Image (cartoon, rainbow, N blue to C red):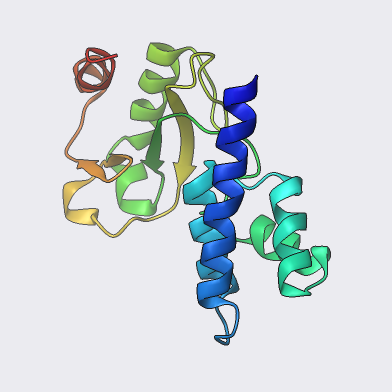
Length: 162
């Protein structure tokens, strides 16, 4: 328990440095929130409230930004976020079948995280790789021209080193 408290203190110290660096620049709320999410892994209300207090911004403003932009998460996410593109090109080429294969492989639904906190599954809109349709991303890795049979081996790449 003490380690977790020390880690949390370190996280808030890191957040204080981010806020101090960017607080006087106009339009940097999103940048501060991105950095905070990098530090904490997500943006719980306690972190949002802390940022609101430090920047003298209403918590409703902070939460409005966090809840509006899909890049922010208010719930803990897995080590790997799998994004399945459901944009038109990917959908026409079978991305829904890819999504179903991932759901079956991991035993979770869109918006959920595996119990071991390894994977979070998200359905996304166009990611700009239409020529590779259907496409998924796993964190910064992009996989294209997929079929449902490709999913087990892709997932295995991320689970074999755990």
